[in-house]
Image (cartoon, rainbow, N blue to C red; front, top):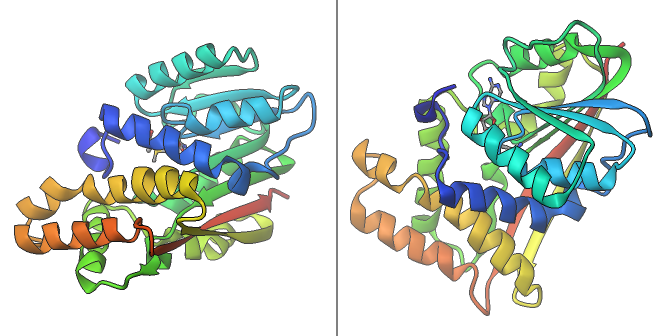
Length: 269
Ligand SMILES: C[S@@+](CC[C@H](N)C(=O)[O-])C[C@H]1O[C@@H](n2cnc3c(N)ncnc32)[C@H](O)[C@@H]1O
């Protein structure tokens, strides 16, 4: 994947967004991401290591091999793991579609916020399944921007979210992939597929969620496609500005904001 094929890009702001997102969501998404002591887990598409440090902290007896197609992200991931002082993670640059590992070499595989960016998510899941031992699990976590709703309601705000969905689709991604995890995993040959929706509800009584999720994860993510949306004519400047202002109002004192993530665990037989 090249930088132009990854809708969020690899900027410093995106690096910070991924860390804010993972810290805010750590308990909601990861309280049950637990692996047996001594097992070896492949984390595919680790990015800057935002999930890696949470996995490594929650599973100190587990060995993680974390890969990403971007060497720059792998450097950042190594630095994040080093700062956290974890010795149970090895990071390396590698492509999910050309995995440099023998078949059946991992006890478990973990993927978070990666399939939504791929043109061939089922093929990616098959490749990951090939390096998984029989009886091992694959855990996939994805969002679904169609699950967003908020108060005050605003059609203008929705148009900016639609810009992100359209911009991602234009480069082969799928920002609505969360709802598809069950059929995708079955298509890829996995069994015992269990999907659990993880619902985020935010209002002013949870200021750390207003800051960490609504503002610094979600709105920053939508704002990230501004140039692309304007340049490709998905929206005009005035409509964009109005939509972003309305979206920011959903982080206000009398506002609410809702979003659903989907976490799937499946078994390779
Ligand atoms: C949204 S980031 C998620 C990073 C991390 N999992 C997290 O949750 O913070 C998606 C990552 O997938 C990586 N990626 C995309 N296609 C890939 C591929 N074919 N092989 C390996 N990594 C890939 C990108 O480089 C990017 O770092």
